[in-house]
Image (cartoon, rainbow, N blue to C red; front, side, top):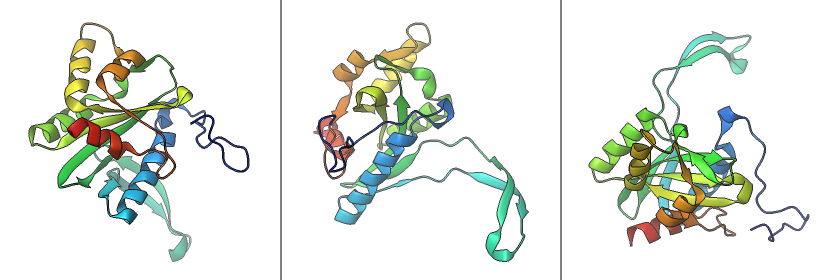
Length: 191
């Protein structure tokens, strides 16, 4: 997609330099755009899950300008997205790496793996979307494959190489509308 440019000359997708705590935020924007497109076209109903937060202190200078001063996370968030597509339940997380050669598996937390495993055990379709942001490569990685590599990480390599993604995941091609059409990769996985 590097050669596709908007009329102003800018590339259609530009990964931003982001801090470690905000990994995946650019890719999430692309997923949100895709989800809006899927919903508006009647293709799927997929939404970002809200993070469970407990509000502790609120400042009320006036009723219309309430400001949260203190809050904390109630429980660890499971995954970023869930929904329904073609009668199938989908549950997935979005991850991003700035590496051009590998994806560190420590980016997937044990509670997320447990959740994806539970979804998978109930017959839902659990997966992660991974972006190699600097080289504009995006993949859908099914839970079953992910679990094999996280098992390997216990005693061996702690990351998945780009080559392993190319061999075991489903690459998501960038397109015009939506930019990150991940349901096409999902269809290749399921058919």
